[in-house]
Amino acid sequence: MLLEFVHAHTVLAPVPFVPEVSLYQAEDSIALWEATEAAGTPQPPPFWAFAWAGGQALARHILDEPDLVAGRSVLDLATGSGLVAVAAARAGARPVVANDIDPMSLAAARANADANGMPVETVEADLLDSDDRYGVVLAGDVFYSREMAGRVLPFLRRAAARGSLVLVGDPGRAYLPEGLIRRAEYDVPVVEDLESVPIRRTTVWQVTT
Image (cartoon, rainbow, N blue to C red; front, side, top):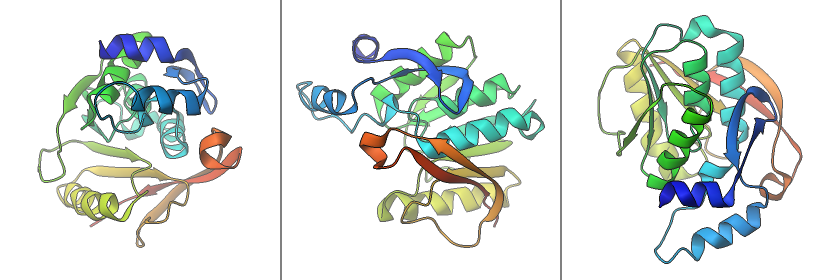
């Protein structure tokens, strides 16, 4: 049923800044938001149906520098559409785990991985208090609220302390922490209805201890 909802309300199309990857994306952001709210049971916002700036920048960076992830285990935290996970798999990461707490997100991530022919595992769980080891931890656009940032940053710093390469993509969200290492910057096309601008300057940061 979740997969049917994804297919019914999105169209498979290349990602603007990462054309190597195609995603099931909403053509009308407002209509999809309304359809999600009318689904009969409370649903999180449909973050899974859009290629957000942070994820696009992170995916671009990985595909341009595949040695960052090739042959290494990867966790894509708060995966949303699965864009970053698919890009990591395309760059040669194995295994790749796409994680989210939203089952609709994971249905979309599975659909997108299949559409791109990429091996991606999905895990529905809150991993932010866990300490599983991954070679690389990736997170696109996770500093959009004080609560989320307050939980995510300690998890990312613990991962870095265990030796993981930890990269985040962020277009200047309000709760981006200080003390990160700038890796790359991109001008990323975004959905203007959601972002109020057509392009967002977006940075890939490395998290350290």
